[in-house]
Image (cartoon, rainbow, N blue to C red):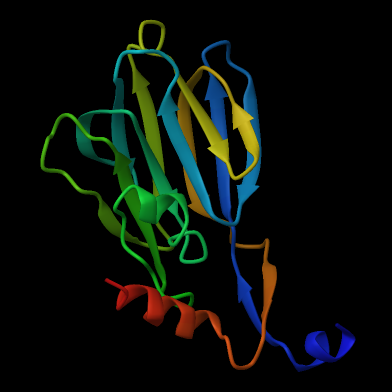
Length: 175
């Protein structure tokens, strides 16, 4: 193990910062290496307004949920929701809906990694939504703001013959 660690190739990434505000006004912050995800808490679809860099981009998304994934997280929950796979060094974030109902054909967006995204929950009392930054879950949110952390970093180690970029390429050409 010590030899493998010494020979490993290091990749440094910036996690996402989530700032969630609950319906009661409590503020919760957390970091996510993979994604920040929102999902409906009841049988009704969630209604979510999406604002990117202080400009409303989607007035109302009716869906089971929505997420922002980092390149490191793009092959996890994001991929299962039909989001794009991102190379680890791509300066992008994947904004991916989960089971979108309206607009029916909206499949998400690729955003610059410097973008700030705000999700406002519409009809939050009637259609409650939870949010999670990787393993930190917040129930009954009113709004969630997400951005790449300008200061926090995480270092991932890979075997030299199994780099992250090679794994991403292999996954993209899998059919």
